[in-house]
Image (cartoon, rainbow, N blue to C red; front, side, top):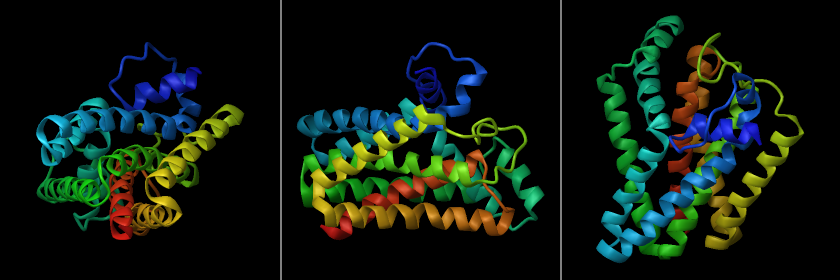
Length: 249
């Protein structure tokens, strides 16, 4: 369970004690489970806020909770990725731009558009399918998008010798594989309960397309992935999952 604690520490700001450096090596196996936890917190906030203020403000509350719980980890990666890949510079220079903590125009616009699209998609799910569908979409999307970045991290190659994911590219081990299967299975089960097999499959198609676009772009421009690219893939995969489910409705 030390790897589980490391995954919580790495992906969130939730209190989880301390972990040794070696514990993070197999933490990616728990990413999907942590995603379900993040989605559950968002879902609870969404449900309560919808009862108090209605769906539009509940959507903003859920997204704000996600930012607070994760420390905007993946959103930061999204902005950095678009700054770097969108710069048109050679691969080495693009990676330097992505490492820069300052946000550029391309990254800011990408962040604005993706978060706005997520808000509209979640509101659309609530309007078309009800609060239960929206909550299950939150939990399933957060779990599955992190399961996908675990797979992307495994297939690399990871471009940075030192970076947030540089020590997480090894085997998951039996515990990590089991955790990944349980987290992914739980997320798929939620999606199935929310919209049935058709809605689940539509969401999965959107998930793969959303994350795949940024992955292929990174492979073409840079030849691999980095922590920022994985964050962008999670955000676009989540958006694609919700849009796929919404298209099914």
